[in-house]
Length: 98
Length: 483
Image (cartoon, rainbow over all chains, first blue to last red; front, side, top):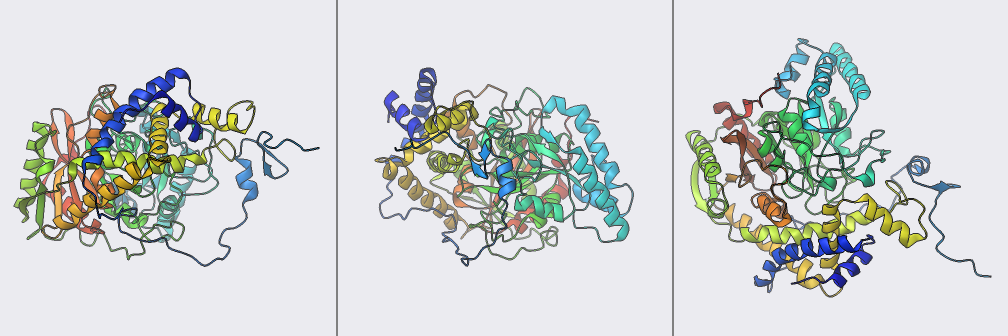
């Protein structure tokens, strides 16, 4: 299946990856080749085949709802790009409403 | 000392023929002298290595040394190491110093290993050549114009060049076995869930598995012994007993039934590779094994299936790199959207972006059933091929790769390179263990024999590998110019 420039731009937006027009063109070529490869799957009859999400068909293990980790706030904040007053700092998301 | 296997080094340390400090200094000197050729390390940790070496020497003096006390190893740079940069060979994590150790790292440290440093790899383990590393390519000790394989190429190159006694790797589609084959060393991908994924930077969570890379099967057994086991911090960790891997290494191969998948021979397989692998299989017959042809009819679908599932899971896993909590952040973001998109545009390389986009596409509205669900169904068909095969045979043998090491930039088309992983990828989709052994040479480049076992049959695979290495010397060949 061919992938269009608009598809690449849409998916890049969903994945939050900025793209220059030349990167979009390059990725359109690469992704078209990969999609051509994976389109071989479409020819396989998989009717009645249960999808496999874990190779041993294991189900998610649950644990008791108890605190198991110690508080490492300082250690985790120390490796963040920007912090203030014990919080992660990001550009303003919501304008103040008067 | 670097020519000794890890098992021999342990014996030498226990007999006090040399100290861990001497051994560690020897490796550090070799790295200093040779690694500019191979670029196998991203980060060196000489101070902590010497500290650990002295601690091991003290433990030997006291008589309470751990199972792997004092042997110098390296970790692939995707295992978190507290206080030591863990980059995943990406600009995104170039400044990332984890506040904690991966379970595998702490288990090996508890056994007493000395960690020399962190090895080079394809960015976020996405690649088969080491060409995507932010820190430049690692190179093959058997020819520096050729790839060491990937993604654990730095680990393979470092072991092959005698720049560590052994190393850890991770294998999502062949990333332990393919570089082991291309560099002429032994590498084991354990059963999915056998070794904890906690603290291992995630690529494709239903496929990722860590394992040992070393000179010999015996060394892999020693390492796996320390690495394997249930970990409550990994939700897919297997809660199964860990056998004594060394105890069965010398078991007889009499009556071992080996299956040769007809799909793994001929076709894309290099004829010289095929000749070498068939000779290696005859060695196993000499040791008492019987051989029969089998079929894994869905083999040709493994690569297409993988290139839906792995990118889909990667796109979800790599969404955590957002420039907020750790890692790279772009300069002066205008707003939150700009922060995310510019951080990720600047922080990721082309191959990683390409896979994130393929995965996002496969999971996006309208395409999920056609791609992701379909691939999961095909995944079951691929696994069922193995389930059927293991009703007739104990182990499956074939080449690890269709060709020996290719040269840099030789496979510029991504799909051509993906297809080089044709024999390794199905094993991850099925979650099975597999061992790659140095088993031949094609020209002046090493070639690997892959042994695929049933679930949790690591002990049997290591046993076969060990017996094979008792009667062959492929694993003893050394790349030239490194004395």
